[in-house]
Image (cartoon, rainbow, N blue to C red; front, side, top):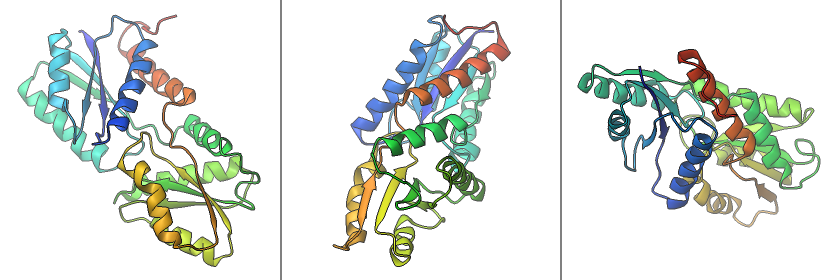
Length: 256
């Protein structure tokens, strides 16, 4: 059995987001043994697609593919789209075996990353004099929305109380604009937005304009923290998750 890694990203039309994804993949690969075959793929919007990524691993002699999804929560992409793509590939290559790692969004380390992004803004007394809004991409999956709320609760606990809300940019949860309107009506004059998004893309790029369109010259101070991105703690988390999966399949392969 020859094991290989397939890093799967969502895909974006924004070159900065593609570059950030590839940099993250490269950083994780640099922490692993060079003998491990690796490839990357995108679920949509970019090439190579998953089938092409698997073909690259087959050319490297891989027979067991460990799929590393760069996704935060188990919604439609993780539950349906990626498994469907993998099933199609396996029908074409029945000799292959696959393992799909779980998403990363509920890990304690990511709460640490989120708090670090908040602290970078230098705003004092977060959650008390400044309301925090965890900004999610959004989806229609109730389980994923509960997971988002769990992250917000963890951040609230680490801030020792205060207000931490969740607002979505799409999907069926409460929209960011509705949350902002509610906070303004409750008298909050300062709000910190924390994009709980892995990579830069259309959503991060258009967020400032979306906020300004909602504000419409209202007297309210809104700060926008950085998305999660290539934070060292995030790199550690993904590397450890991949390493643990490999250790279960073979001898330890993380380089010293």
